[in-house]
Each structure stands twice: as C-alpha cells, then as structure tokens.
Length: 385
Ligand SMILES: Cc1cc2nc3c(=O)[nH]c(=O)nc-3n(C[C@H](O)[C@H](O)[C@H](O)COP(=O)(O)OP(=O)(O)OC[C@H]3O[C@@H](n4cnc5c(N)ncnc54)[C@H](O)[C@@H]3O)c2cc1C
Image (cartoon, rainbow, N blue to C red; front, side, top):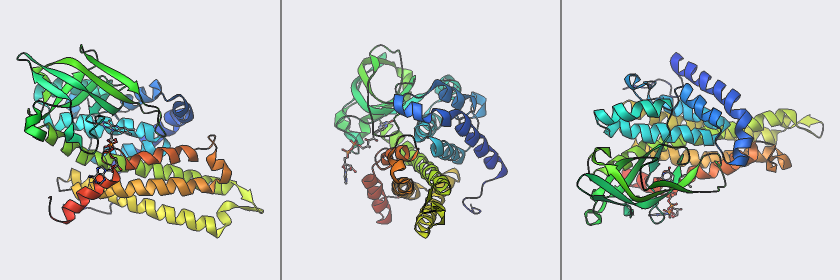
C-alpha cells in the first residue's frame, strides 16, 4: 500500500481531531491543574470521553463502538495529550491495550459481553507488571490454578494504569512456571469478584491524575470462559498488544511535546524583556524552531508506524523507534520550552512544569527506552522479524 504525505489527514480525520481538540479545550483544560493537584481524574472527563466515543474507537459499531481505525486512536491520544497527558494515557490504555486485546483475541461471547460495556461506560486495565518482573515481564509470579470448574488466581500486580477507575481487568498469570513463558495465560477479571481487589495507589512525579495502583489477586475465582485467547498463549497476547500500544505512548509523547511547545510560543509573544517580546530574540526563535523540527520528525515516525499497522504491514521496528524517539523529543521539548518561561516555568501556575514532569514517563512504561533499543537492535541485526 502506498501512503500519501504522512501528516496529511483525510477530511474525516481532520473533523475527528477538531472534535477531540474542542473537547480537550472545553472539558479537560479547565480541570488540568486541579486534577494534577488532587491526583484524581475528574468524572466529567471520563464521562465525556465515553460520550464522544473515544473509549471504543476501534470497537466495531455492532458492539456500540465507533468502528474507527488504529490511526484514529493515535490521533485522539495525541490531541488529548496536548492538553493533559494523563487523559491521553486513559484513552490510550483503553483503546490500544484493552480493547485491542478483545478485538484480536476474544471469542464471540466475550466480545458480546464486554465490548458494549467498554465502549459505553466501563474502564479497562492491563495487568502485566509485578514487583520483580517489569522489563522481564515473563518472569511473573502470579499463578493460575486449574480447579476443574474454574481458575484460581493468586498474586499481585503493580503499577496498573486506570486501576482505580476500572471495572474490567485483563490479568496475565502463569498456569505452570515449569512451562516458562508458555504457561502465561490472559484472564478477564472483574471488580467485585471475590478475592479481587485494587490496592495501594501510587503517588507520582507526573501524569498524576492517571491512577497507578496495585491489583491484588487473593484466590480469585475466575470462570473458565474468562480465558482470553488460548491457555498458554498469553505471552503472545501481551507482546503483540504492547507492540501496538507503544505507538500510543509515542502519540502521547508527541501530543505532550506539542502542548509544551505551544505554551512556550504563546509566552514568547507575551513576555517583554529589554523592551521587546521574547519572540523577537534570535536565541529564542532558534530554540523554538529547532524544537518544532524535532516534533515534526517525531510526528512522521508516529504516524508512519500507525499507518503501517492499519495497512497490515510489519511495524514493530517503526513502533519501537517511534516510542524511543518521541520519548526523547518530549523530554527535550518540555525542558527547553520551560526555559522560555524563565523563572515562571518553574512555577505551578504555568503549564510548563507539568509537561516537564509528565514527559519522564514516556521513557519508562510500555517498555523502557533500553527495551526499545534492544528490540530495534534485534530487528536491524536480523535476530527478529
Ligand atoms: C505510571 C506507570 C504506569 C504503568 N502502567 C502499567 C500498566 O498499566 N500495566 C502494566 O502491566 N504495567 C504498567 N507499568 C509498568 C511499566 O511498564 C514498568 O515499570 C516498565 O516496564 C519497567 O519495568 P520496571 O519498572 O520493573 O523496571 P526494570 O525492568 O527493573 O528496569 C530498571 C532499569 O534497568 C533497565 N534494564 C532492564 N533490563 C535491561 C536489559 N536487559 N538491558 C538494558 N537495560 C535494562 C531498564 O531500561 C531501566 O532503566 C506502569 C509503570 C508506571 C511507572
């Protein structure tokens, strides 16, 4: 498939982005500071995301979803993250991880049961990480025991995004550690199942409105029909969703960089020193021009990876490169944009310091920057396809 100019959007895509921008400006923006301070995602934001169809972008229309493309999810995450990367990741996890798992691996009954809920009112979480298994995710200790009539899950997951608000959890556990990664299986758990609970909520440097919690599995009785995909194939479910999900995080970082840069552009028009607006100084102009160039490069990489995925082509290398690069760009843009504000950049009243704090996560979750480099090297070295 041939692509047109990568950053050119179709009329439908442009209209979609305009709607998301409007939502971000009118519903999200007034709440950003308060949500960051209180570390609570406002209900009006969550409800608005559902009402706009942004929590089921790729869910087929027959199940109440918007029936859109993966690229549209990426555009939504980017647009939301320009205003608040916490809202960006809420939309990202729902669409690129949770819904994606259901779309690719759920059977007809599971789709019928969960898709209408996920697209209209219920948040989902993706539960892989444990205290001693982060990058080395398949070293997980969570166990699933076959009890004949049901599965019994035991263990503890940490750092689970959206867990405080979620009702539906895709949980990875091993049915037999002797099988190694081939024992890993994906299960659907629901809030309210006996033995299932959401534990400690982390206090964080950035994306503070996004909840990050423990998920405790204390002999949770999970119905047999809640295995998603095949028993022993959970490793495939987790790797393949993360391959796609990391384009979402790259989009989050791309949006963040644009939000930080736009703030600095605006400030440079307002602030007068030595009798001139900051934007009249070449030192400031060169900085803003260079950062805009880096953002454009990141955008090309993110859009390319997303469009490759929608075209059914191999995108793993491009996705890892996009995440690695967009994470670097976001951190640099957030840092140098903050400096344009001078001392005011350091003060919470201005948006720059939040973007700076939020940027750090892009290099850490859904595979650290080192893990992206490891994947990229394996691909360029021919060890992986
Ligand atoms: C805010 C937040 C939200 C998250 N949301 C979720 C979620 O929703 N679901 C979920 O399952 N997880 C989630 N995570 C977990 C996240 O994906 C992990 O934190 C991440 O994968 C890194 O794992 P770790 O923290 O254990 O670091 P480690 O794996 O211990 O890594 C520590 C350092 O060592 C480096 N390193 C490790 N191995 C190698 C190697 N082989 N070669 C070179 N360097 C290496 C890493 O790059 C890193 O710099 C979240 C984390 C955070 C902070």
